[in-house]
Image (cartoon, rainbow, N blue to C red):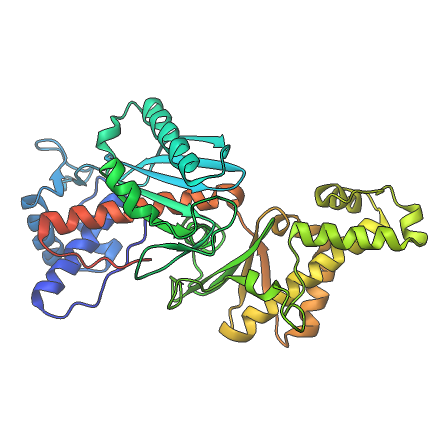
Length: 402
């Protein structure tokens, strides 16, 4: 997992930064030698040796068995506690997903359940069941979990930690989910917006591994975005950066932009069906309009369905152009039920983008799809647990939020 550190301000901070670099590399690839570590992170062998000594004294690193050496005769080292478990959760209105991993970010077990009771109490009950299930699969004690990361459909206020603009779950809006769950479970809990978590995962595991600046747009039952700038998620002063649903509200003069969500596009299709005409008469779509059916019909050559798909693509293109105009990203990742189906409307999307933006924008599908948020939540839990352990053992952390 990539780490992020604050800028060292003195000799002690510089030593801590070096120790963190060595430890993160050992989490990523254990066992390793001094030479391999120095090459991987760009430090000298004496600097790596000094960092290893401190980390071994702190119990964060250990030599591999007594006298174990690499094939070239060099001593081997590994991060201690790499398999200590953390839990990632994606709280969605249709499914709640869980992944259990070690501190080395290796997946140990996963499970999911239908969301069921769409209340805050229902979320907590489902989380408890999923926690039990993944621990059972991995043969892990529940009490050993070091941190929990959760992706939720709402804004997490950076100062209060309270959830705002949350939809779909009764009682979630206004709650301090991280604090409440942490107190209930006796485990550190970190809560993040679901699209932000998915974007973090896309950069770490998916289509944007080598891209520092990109946007992710999620189009499904709702519409949201995440901005990754300089390799870090830009959350904004209230944590609400990317809340695109604000653009579609019915203001006095109407919405700022046309809504491409599944509900809005189904309503658009119903209007066209009601208006009639040759395309409607020749179409297999009769209503009530269902967007997955419309996209499937477009793939089969239904001209009416293609009109709806192309209008959806044009609305998504307008969102892309709006983000490009503000932050000048060159890559936009599409995710969500509608977003991932946009290949059917790609010609219309690209044509509309060419009208709106005077340079080429790469609009690509997510490689992770539906598991992006839970993978991002897992990554947040890994980072949070490492931060706590590093601070506990060495007295100071240089970790910052990704």
